[in-house]
Length: 396
Ligand SMILES: Cc1cc2nc3c(=O)[nH]c(=O)nc-3n(C[C@H](O)[C@H](O)[C@H](O)COP(=O)(O)OP(=O)(O)OC[C@H]3O[C@@H](n4cnc5c(N)ncnc54)[C@H](O)[C@@H]3O)c2cc1C
Image 1 (spheres, protein in one colour):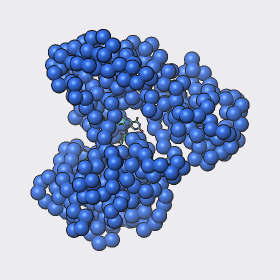
Image 2 (image 1 turned 45 degrees about the vertical axis):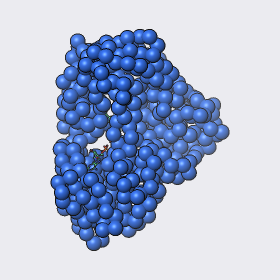
Image 3 (image 1 turned 180 degrees about the vertical axis):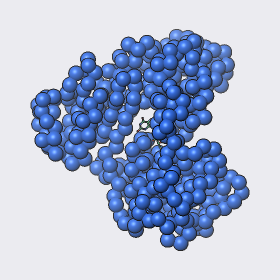
Image 4 (image 1 turned 90 degrees about the vertical axis):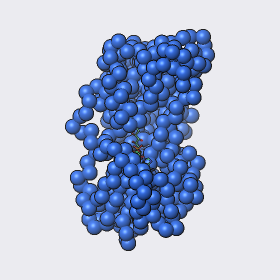
């Protein structure tokens, strides 16, 4: 390989691509350019441990095993020149690459009708956001979270642990509606209500003034801090400007290849071809960014073609609930195994005689086995799946 591999971005996608290369080849020169003025950190802890305790020992991502690496922080890649094979940096310099990996992640969507409110409004994506939120969260604070997705709910859980008063406003009729089956969604909503969170579903903010949010259902809510968690948009603008095919995400195949030779992409910024569905989709999870990038790194270093086709999955920690979800989360028959009261249960999404999705609460063993059953398209009997005494490993 002539010239360095240049990786744009400083999150888990970037670090994992570098790790994948280095574990296979000690010599390839790697340069990482990241716009954040922080060494890489674990973004998933920002809504969990970090809010509760400040920095934890495992918070920093491990760059030590990536030797022969040049790290350029606090610097943005402004432009790609795919003909010259170089990138232009915000400090005016240009760097040539043999291979370019885009791991630029995503940026939270903000809402336009919050400009007149007199209290702080923020998203939760970066260490800076989380540090700001952490300082504001006191028992006397009225926190309003807009959006009942995973990040909003994790923030609610951490804020309740700190004694903060929490209200959630969600446009859709359910919490976690994009990423959880109906039974899990109802269970999680009820759990938050029991922990003292106020949830307004099926409504939105019409106007915001001083410290008041006026909803379209006639309710007025007072806030000291507003956190917006209504999804993210892919940071694909530099790729789009270079003529690479994008549509809220850089299109990549199962090998991380974009439509431009020598340019690859991984993580939240990608719209990737799913080997099992045949559709392109954005997958905004830690495991996806990590494993897609590790596979790419190995392929780049070895000149190999290892197809990345992991069943998409994520985890979420809320109160004492360890939630793990894999595969499809709706559109199939649901079978529950275990007890929703304990809480210790798994919800299986069954299509025909196959498991297409699983959501586990405090049942990591079910989750590990079921993920394999989904990946292997194992044929199962419905009556066995719902029986907690039945050993799921029988189907492996
Ligand atoms: C608060 C929070 C909690 C989460 N919890 C979970 C969880 O529990 N489980 C789970 O599976 N997932 C979780 N996620 C999602 C997970 O963190 C992301 O899927 C993952 O971080 C994506 O990694 P990435 O490297 O693709 O992108 P990112 O982590 O977004 O990193 C991209 C980096 O690129 C930088 N960048 C962008 N453009 C440029 C440019 N032009 N030049 C230089 N640098 C640039 C960005 O500033 C950023 O540092 C959570 C996310 C958040 C925000």
